[in-house]
Length: 111
Image (cartoon, rainbow, N blue to C red; front, side, top):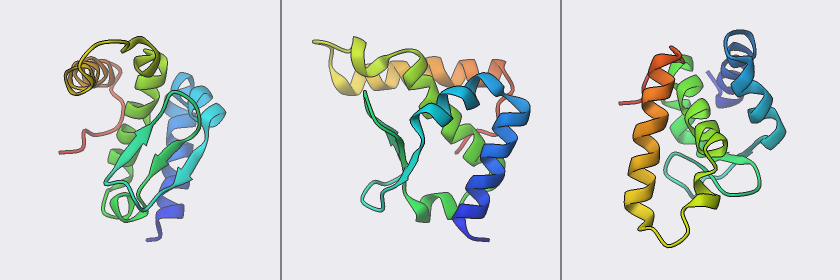
């Protein structure tokens, strides 16, 4: 299955099951970037994804990954980091996001 089809299925599932996340996802959009290992989002701009990484995941894990990146936007992690250690800040942000996604029953965690 091509990653575009998987992405379309994941986006549709997010729209149907998690409209709050979809509203933010579609405002930012998606952009293919084969030069990153997985997924990422910056302070501005789209959520970027590696097509090979996406192709290896089942749709529920793509849903989780996209919503995880939306979580960084929701919490404004890029804007609020300031002087903090970037690696520790990202780990703390990831922990908060992962707990939120589990509580909201969003997708399936990526191992």
